[in-house]
Image (tube, rainbow, N blue to C red; front, top):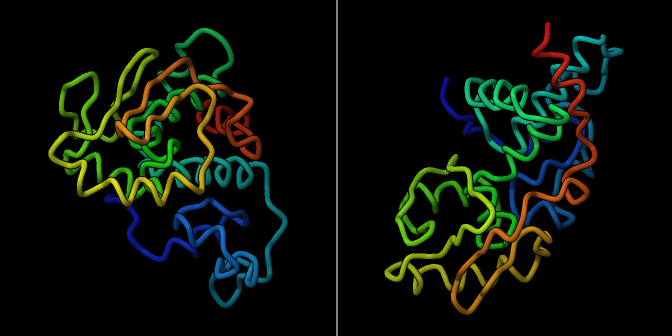
Length: 207
């Protein structure tokens, strides 16, 4: 199954929370989740009481849609997190946060994760001096992500506009002049989305 390319605002309404899939529009009054918080469709306003299974699958879908990951990819992240030392849910979030497209988004080099994924796949970024066009590439502490020299003139204005609206997480450092990002540490769990109950996701895949 391919990546979802339909109306992104309907996805937020289906999950009942703002997932910030539309970039700058999500920070304005034009965001439909405020005006139409019910699920899309003619029966959207009549939500049934969720069963335990429904709660788990909705939490899983929410996290998948935030990071724009397909089911097969997401399952691999969960399996890798299970093998990691420590809490499985925390390891899962760290894997997703370390994705190259997410790092580009988090540092304000793109207004949304979708656009960050497009910029990476089009070959505008290099990691430690090596061109990298794989959005799912997992960065490590000490890595340097930078816009390639031939792409800097094209992206400078985009980066400047997007960076003004988003604070940089403490585990990343940003150089707007050099269009460079440094991974200074492991992802800080306190700065991640606290609305996601990762224990429900782990339980869903442990059935």
